[in-house]
Image 1 (cartoon, helix red, strand yellow):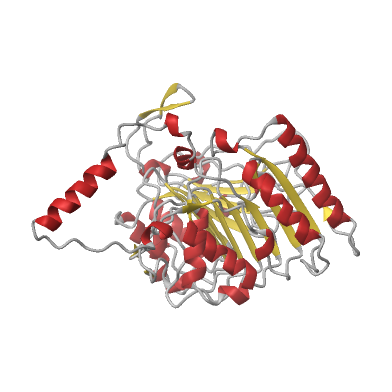
Image 2 (cartoon, helix red, strand yellow):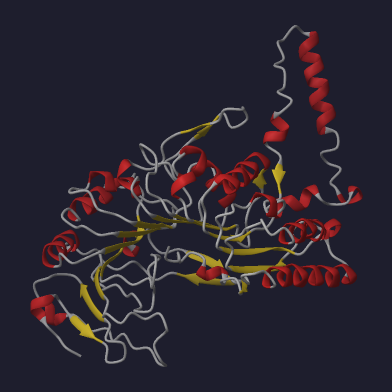
Length: 477
């Protein structure tokens, strides 16, 4: 261990990974009073551990120094390691401790430590002292309604990072728009945002011409890599002021990813030419995808210049209610449509104007299975394809389309690698459940599909899809 007060309150080098950490605690005045946190990990370093020693400057808004593991990668292209990361953990700014339940156990969070009155000045000191900071990580960052965030953004004036990472607290939203007030503007190339709520707004979605408002300030328009984790489909789509101009890699994981991507491409026409890599993961608890959004995504795929496509798609759990046998449906709502009809008839007889229903409204709000009919809508520019979907009756039938496309030598002529696995849980109920015989047929069809692709000239390499946890780490383009 090496302590250098001149370079920060404490400066620690682990003898295992040579991972350097600088951490600011309660004050910059007495650096020797702070404890040293050994970043100790047994076993060999991971394969992707950087050759260059990464630096992490960690600052806490409490008197207790924050902790960040040296093996926690950033969600940025490549190895996931920045040259110098500024890590700000706002956990102590959260509300007082509460009791919650996880895995059937009651867990009481410890009380928040006392606030650090030197927190903002410590940030300014770090900004002035370390101009080589190229990544900023704001953990449990508050929402825009917290006046405290404005002071934090002001304290970050002068930095020029290329990567920004933000995760919210219990409110599931954070003040990512505050970056618009930072000067000079940051030359951001990549952004990871793990927030449910955003600043967008969707209007008239039940009409042929829905309207989507700007959801990000213009300072994000030149991003090249974007990862949206846990976004909702109503207001957390990517639409920077002026439109996205350089986005090459887009990742959306969990919740309404299909709807989010559909709105993103609808708002940014340039993506048709700039996007090279798309990763979509509906997640284990994903939601239903609207038919109109699925159609828009397929149309984009067909017309795009994508080179890499990673899809992990499944049905939402609410889809199960639409696929239950008729005798299993609830009878409590059987009379509801009749009551609505009777009410409308009574209004008409009373002279009340009854608006005419758009015959296409029901179709626009209809849900669709996002993993079907993909084979006929893939761009010929693809060089890498990874596809995971549920094993059900619909996918068994759709495999015939995949096999027919694979037999066509003009289909995906540039394809170099393919991963194809049907192992996700069936969320459509008993009607879509495969029998044992059908499961065997499904497996043989998948083997046949991969065999056809492997037998091409030049041969297509058969690979395994990435684990779900890895999909939020974008691959280099």
